[in-house]
Structure formats: C-alpha cells, structure tokens
Length: 380
Image (cartoon, rainbow, N blue to C red; front, side, top):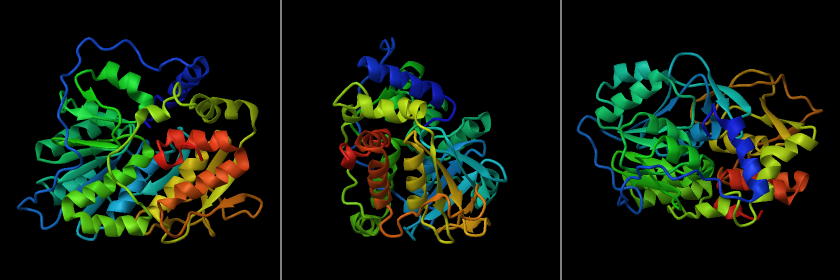
C-alpha cells in the first residue's frame, strides 16, 4: 500500500463499507482510449551487455512496504539465471511498513542505487518498484532507468510511484483496488484496468494487491527463462497457478459480502479490542516470502501488533542475503510466537489465515484475505 495516505484511506473504506456505496469518484474528464494489453508478460529478449537478465528492486529508506519488497525478491532469487540486486536509495537501513500501515522491521539491503549505477551504467533490464514513500530522487532514478531501456515492474500500489514519473500516460496498468478512486482522479491519462492480477503494456508491468506479487514474479521468470523454469520454482513455492486471471469486484467493500470483513480489519477491530502482541521468529536463513507474509497478515487484522525477534537480538541474514534487524529483545516466552512456514513459502499466507481465523474468527480472516487480494481465500 502507498505509505502516506494509508490511515485516511482505510477510514474512507470503512465509511464505504458501512454505507454500502461504491467507492468511486466522478469519472475524470479525460479518459485514455482503451489499450490492447498482452495476455501475460511477453518473452524477454536479452541485451548485448548482459549475459543474464539484470533486475533491480528499489526501496526508499524512509518507508517501503514489506511484502511488496520481500515477496518478489524471495521468488526471483530462486532463479539462478537472474542477476538480482536489492537496492536502497541511500546507505543505512530501510524502514518497512505492513499493508495496513503498521511499522515493519528494518532491513539492510546489499547495495544502493548509486553503487548500482556505477557498476551498471547501461541500466537494468527490469526495475521492481514496491509501494513506498515517494521522493524526487526516487522518481528521477526510475526515469533514468526507463530511459536506458528498463521495464518498470510496479507491485501493488507501487503503481502510484511509477505513475508519478509521467512516463506511461496512455498505457494500461493496475494496482490495489483500494486506490482506484485516487488513481483515476490523479492520473487520468493512464488506462487503469480491473480484473487482471498483472498487466504488461510496453515498458510497464503492474500488479494488483499484495499477493499478486507471487504470480507476477513467476510470470516474469517464465518470460525470461521459459515455462519449465517457472514451473520448477512454482512447485518449490507451492503455487499452482500464476495466470493473470482476477476478479477485482470480489474484493471491493460494497460487493459480494466484503463490507463487514473489511470494516473489521480496517476499523472496528481497532476500536473494540486491545491488540495482541506477536513475536515473529527470524533465524539465519529465514525465507523472505514466508517472513513477510506471516508478519504482514497478522499486522493486517486490526487485532495484532507484530514484531520480528531473534534468539539473541542480533541481526539475521535471510535465505538470499538480506539483513533483518530485530525490533524486539531476545525471544520472550511470555509472548505469542509465530514461526514462518519453512516449506513452500506461498503457503505461509494460508497458514497465517488459518491461525487468524482460529484466534479472531472468520470475518477477520476473510478481511485480511480481501486486503491481500488473495483469490484462493475469498471465504477462509
């Protein structure tokens, strides 16, 4: 989710849910003409300067959405034929936030955008853009990468960041359903499209809600290295389907019984319940996808505060080389402990939703699934 507008926007969603009215504004005056988009992500054609695809994932140190960053990183890292770079805008730790805006753990990424530019002046093949705080430096860097030939891949409301560059007016894109009103009003020259988990239109690939980073990352691997490679990684993750099929209406608060679950997680759970505190255990080699989805799901209930903790309160290195700085002292046995699922990381969200339903009930679990736009669990 985009960092700055989260609290006000989820308040507006609550009002929309209670009243049962459409969360949309007056259509913008200038609508772009319909754009023909591909069925998936077209095959990648290598560049002469790169022996293998060069991908950068960029994060604003000030605030970057946790799952938007770690899920594509953890999936793309499984493809050894990719050169993957996780970049912060400046040195030091990256502050993360969860999908509902709560603080996430601090992360240290291996390099900065300046270091990447020095070692790869020709630019990346793909730049992955999570939802994050915007800045002039970030927008300028994205514009420079696009000018060098990079395809920008926005994750969830990272689409609003890419839209700010002004490079893709007239093209098709998507993002999280919750920002549809804002996107159409603020960026009317972009053809904002529903009912697709991801869309490829020229030099822009975009995804819908948080969980869409999983199929989009697999589709990107397929575009670069073929179906067999994507299938191997999908099997490792526990993913059965990575097609772009999606039904946006199923997640919107005024349709299909979504109003009450979304009202619970976005507002009423915070009113009437003292939040529980969970420590999410992070050990050396922790899987990035499992860690992010576990922490993010519980943080989205409106009933939980989640923290990352380690056995000795020291930083830990994830499976693919990122450093997580724990924000709790050594594990306290008095706290409820959540352990990210070690096998088939995509199942971490299933595991979290089952735990949430057991602890907080079906409506809260369904509300979290709706926030994540998780199609397999419209009715957990």
